[in-house]
Structure formats: C-alpha cells, structure tokens
Amino acid sequence: MEAPKTPREERPRNIAQTKSIFDPELSRQAAIDSFKKLDPRILIRNPVMFVVEVGTVIVGFLTVYYLFEDPSRFAYNAAIFLWLLLTVLFANFAEGLAEARGRAQAESLRKTRTDTPARRVTDGTEEIVSSSELRRGDVFAVEAGEIIPADGEIVEGIASVDESAITGESAPVIREAGGTTPASLEGLVCSPTG
Image (cartoon, rainbow, N blue to C red; front, top):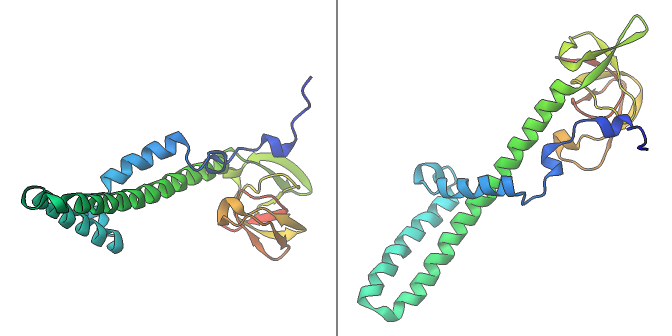
C-alpha cells in the first residue's frame, strides 16, 4: 500500500527543472533554431557571431577558390571553414537551447499560477480558492512545503523560501513580515500586491 502524498509531492513539477540539459525535445528544437539563426538578418543582433559568420562565408569562398587554383592550400582553408561554421552553429545551438529552456520555465510558471490552490483567510476562517481568485487586499496562508499562490507582501511569519523558480538562485532565502515574496514559492501568510 502506497503512503499518502505530502503537499510538497502534490505540487506541480517545474518542467525546466525536471528535464535534463540535453533533453531530446529541447535539443531538437535548439538544433533546428541553430540553422534558422544562420540568417544574417537574425544573427546581426549578436555582433560577435555575425562577424564570425561573415568570416566563415569569406573563408568558404577562399576554400572553393583554392580547390581549383592551389589544391595544396585547400585542406587548410577547408579546416578553418569547418571550425568557423561549427563555432557559429554551436553558438546558435547554445542560444536556442537556453531559449527553449526559458520557454519551458515560463510555461511551467504559468501552469503553476493557474493550478495553485490558495488558502484565503477571511474573518479568521480559511477557504480553499484558486490563486486566480485572489485580489489585492486578500490575505492567504501558506505553510511549509506549499507553493505561494500569488505575489504578495508578507504580513505575518518568517520562513526559509525557495525562490529558485523565479530567480534561479539555488539557496533558500529568509523572508519575514514586512517583505515581499514572488509567487510560486514556499512560505508564509501574505497579502497580494497586484
């Protein structure tokens, strides 16, 4: 018989954190993007890689020229051309992978926002509502291991808060009454700010 899940195990999983850095889905999209980004109109936004791409094109023409004019120089120029091309492709791949992980992270946070139950406190009683129903001035309670359902100001309590989903910082931070806290974190008794 399986043990009942704790609130921490029931919370939505962060998509970007559960996928490995070279997840096949993210890597495939990044590989496609790396070739799309060879378009000079797109690559000009990254001046350094644009200059490398221009150098790649020039060395490519020289490689073809030396193939017919001086075959002894062809191998050297071909090697330089391949290194430059691989450099541009790898830079585009890395950028595409970072963008794909960023999109997955944003989607995960959006999903967490809509799927998070909130314990709204009204006249000393708690009621479970969707986080989208919270309004400015509402007060909601959050216990250890739960996700903070909305951005808010901490009105009571102190806790160690995992802000890695928002800030990327892996170490928990101490939050207490009078401070603010981002949504989707562990925490305290808060009041929405927006």
